[in-house]
Image 1 (cartoon, rainbow, N blue to C red):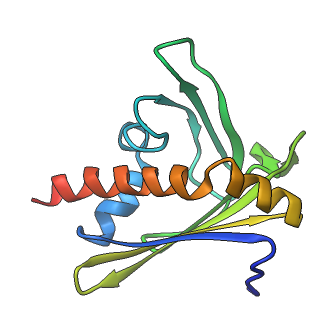
Image 2 (image 1 turned 45 degrees about the horizontal axis):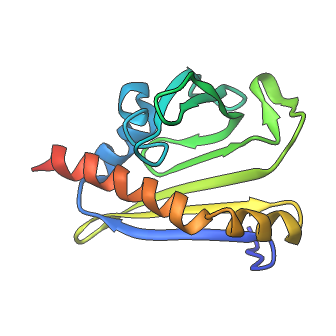
Length: 157
């Protein structure tokens, strides 16, 4: 994979918990719902079919309102405990999405302090990348990575 700074955004951090806990938080709906959207918004997993081509569909409730569409995509790859690739360019069953936007590669690796975590997000155009950054990529993805860390670090102690 060739990284392209004109198209890609990345969040890196160390999570002070074992890799299997971080993986489980990504692959267990009840855990995933606890951190996937920045608080105080709420997340609901509508579908999580953990296989290539399987659906990954979430809903969001902001300010206590009704749940609305949030992410509708599919998994491209799952390497147990180490890598998860998802996109909203395709939906379940590899069907083309109406409005493709990102492909994300989540990698987990052992680290002396726990887990090296990376969310690498690719965009189709520099304009999409710039828009995602301006919409708050670092705040949003950074916040949810922090919420993920908080959840699994609490469970680890």
